[in-house]
Amino acid sequence: MDFIKDFIDKNKKLSITILLAVSTLFYTILVAAIDRKPIGPQGSKVGWSALNGSFRDAIGQHPAWDKFTDVLMVLAILVALSFVAIGVMQLIQRKNIFKVDKTIWGMAGLYVLMVIVYIVFDKIIKVNMRPILEEGDKLECSYPSSHVLVICTIMGSAYVAWGQIKFLTERKMILEICKIAAIGIMALAIAGRLVSGVHWFTDIFGGMLFAATLISAYIAAVPMIKFKAKEKKLTKREEREATIY
Image 1: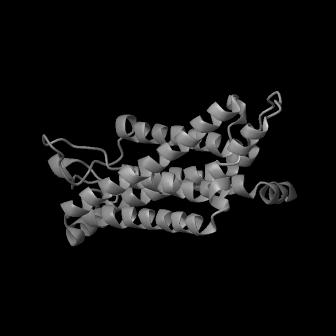
Image 2: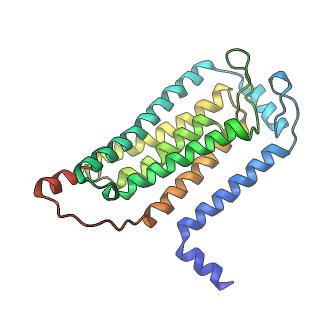
Image 3: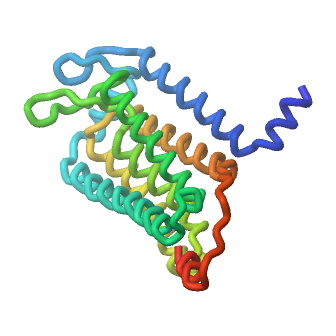
């Protein structure tokens, strides 16, 4: 089995991503199949009903935390838009889409995958429905927690990507503040969704697993991104502007 060991040693980042993906898939199957009982609104069935029901009864509902995590979601989306803006500025300055930093390309791919995961589990594979009814007495999908998925994916990948941006690497204090803020936002998002009572416990943990898998995929994929674009000699002004981002 030496070839397996050699593969793992040479592709540790990819191996971790595969392990996380398999674990997330296995966990999703368990949540969808084990101890499903109609403990949700309108008799909706919920996986791991004993655990989820006990946690719901112990926590209760706190709408203020629900609103607070909505604010965190907006902050995360603004962070994602900042990377989009950086990519657009690089494209304008370098006049070649293939000269946009691979960090930005990686973020673009990550965001696409995140949206795909959200759509699949919100529209196609409905594992659990929320423990509360939304406006109009409607049931909404709960697995995985969309807030945890989106906030942790964006902020976790930003934590990594910020370390590749020249503007921030040259300003270590700002970089550290950004990283601390990213960790804080992720922690508050997870805690806020747990306390709010708008998701089952298993669904919040599922959001964390999906986010960890996507972030790991981003870390593994970025070094593999290579473009063979025709080189263009930059003017001094273009070189100076290219170092900003």
